[in-house]
View 1 (cartoon, rainbow, N blue to C red):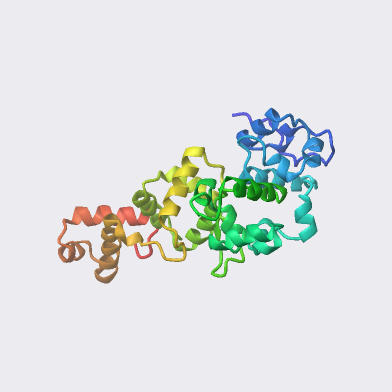
View 2 (cartoon, rainbow, N blue to C red):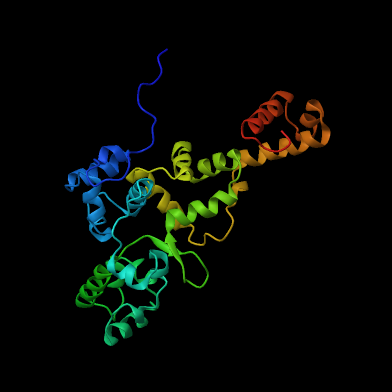
Length: 288
């Protein structure tokens, strides 16, 4: 069998005329940039982040992937002016009090009546949700959107507080990935969580690996996490009956060290216990 003839050398040295193909971007990110008229690294490097985020099908996850590939070349995208002026990042910006965002005094009063004190609480709401407050009307909405556009933000962004004080904000999926990774340490935990949540193994694997998700996969995961707004609470994996049976079989076999004795205690056939232990070994449960 012949070896793969494709070169495995590192990326070419930085230069403005390097084509986007050499960045080896995900197909969706590459197509979005090409459709928007970007063909070289130099063109992308001259664009501002807020301009890239206006590209259709190009979101913040696409921007993170693009910046990661550019960093390998020693190239950085021009930071937004508001970010350079405040010397901060997006999550810190979302934790800013609304008094520092450039709203008029009248608008600040309206936002406080809607119980909105920080920028993250504002951008996390959709226009429809804001219009439900008596203090906010269509004209107020236009003023809010104008200020947010100047900051490179928009209404309806899916960000949630990452700490109890609301000083740090994260994308909902990024926050869920960070916290679920600690709560689902084994393959078995992830398998039964996916089964209980109604998502495929492939979707959950791609989610934990940080790979780009389809619009359907992303929206389904966001619905799951929105149904569980308190992400600080542990996920109750033991709601899944199959998981309970596997764990019980492993614990009993660990105590007895005998397949027949385990079957007698569990009131199962020895073949059923053997299958459960086989499943536990596949999921690397301790003691199986």
